[in-house]
Image (cartoon, rainbow, N blue to C red):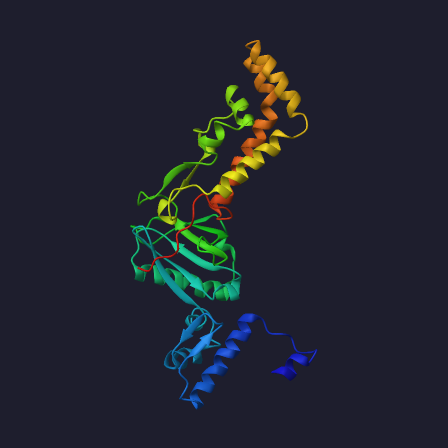
Length: 298
């Protein structure tokens, strides 16, 4: 194998090809070394010699018959009343694991869907069928539609292809403010914008729906709120705000709310963009409002 790699005319094998070759080779080794206790793949997946000998003859079979079960593991967990699962080992093939949390399925139903998706991804990669923000309708009417999303894992396993219920059929969602009232009441920028009707912490643009059962508690993280306060202060310190603030206060003193609003509109737009960015970051698990809960075995 080494001499082939040293040959400039030999095209280097990709990871999937290497995996197939290694799988077949290990199977052959097991045939002549019956005392082997097991096979550990990639430091993440362990299989018995019997299982390896059973599946490895299909090492070079095309999808869907390739022995993907030797290369990755499916780990189940419970979130509220929902059984979920994530993969271990799939990222070596496609750069992402799967994180599957769709309401209305038992453990077997979850396993079948995650296994089928994993097998497909190993064979085809992240093609059009697995685009982020794509919605699918499940064949099971109790499940309904689910959403595919490329994001970070809330369990810290890196980038994932996330599968989640498109609609909250199980009543798991709860609404939280992005910028909390504790900041809105005291930050000078938000106080000024509130006076002219350009900021309201109760409006939809300042809300996000999260699942409480994804978190240890509903105590907000200081890191998020400190970051929000810092970004708001940066907006406050931008060029021209001091003049706009002075003009807006003079307009308010005259009772001219419309003029005061016009002076402050650019900074209200900046706050709106901050809200959108934080909402997206929370949705993609690039940021967290609460401490994520670790996976719990079913």
